Length: 127
Image (cartoon, rainbow, N blue to C red; front, top):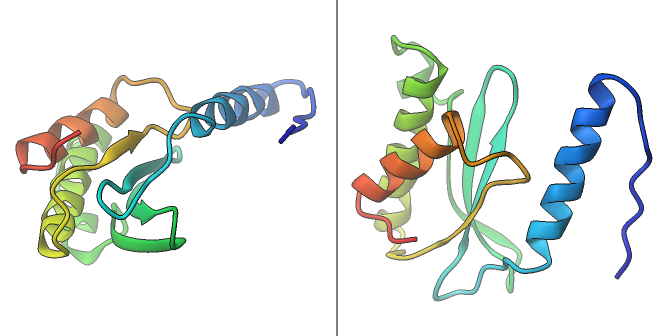
């Protein structure tokens, strides 16, 4: 399937590049019932992580920096990303999920994305 992405200028160029990377990654990465996909969405202010079964099209577990337990927490955005990673791993394990496929959503594996992934691994989720 061919996807067209418009060429843009300025900040829209960054969004376009991220979208292209995400499309390229999604060609290879998909979640199954045995090993669902851990999707990370990053904005300038917040992080969202979801564990998705692509066969059924259902979200099995999710966590966000907008959750009440994380929202009032102290620390910078990387510290909040760590908390989101630990929380999504905890919720995934409660749903019976031990291993996932990591989908960084077209973002570089550095900073908040890496912090979230490391925290999820430390909480016992296998990548």
